[in-house]
Image (tube, rainbow, N blue to C red; front, top):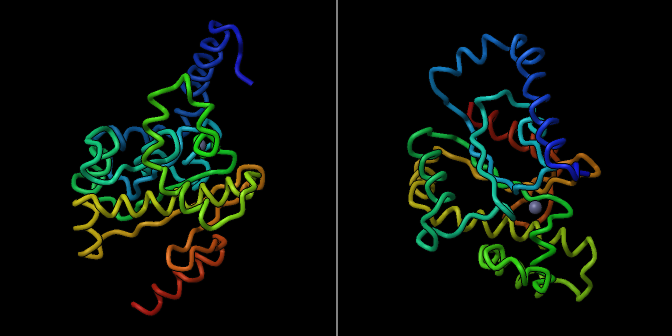
Length: 227
Ligand SMILES: [Zn+2]
């Protein structure tokens, strides 16, 4: 729950910064000094702006490994539909930083997905409403495939179809299409179940979920076959 007094909220954030300086920074000073001269992240991590997602904790990565792109609903408009922050960040990550993996991570209890089902909630938020049009096809797919109930199961299904849709959008970006053609990059979709603390990997072909353990085994086999 956020503080109702804005001054207390800011105070808590500043106290956190103070703690970073005294407790965290000294322990990792060498790393921060290395990072001073540039970044070479391995992965573009696209996820929702939702405050409950912490990409570095979730993937156990140190600062400098993930190039993180966040917005409401982890959306990537198809190329040409919106030349804004998302398109430029994707282009920069692939062309300049040469990331070798792009992950799109949706999550449980996503407010954006719930708003797609209940658009009346967005009457006072025209910008959010417009932004979520880039996820509308996922809503249509979920509607076509599922019953009419709009419980948590449907929101999960919608969230997963939205991740798959945004992966398809991502492939329309010339930088991504080029890197895929040269087999320089892997794309993967995830569903993060917050209360269970679990990530499920979405298989784009079967549209089924895989556990992280299954995905690791599959990947290890592929790597063995190549060596
Ligand atoms: Zn969300």
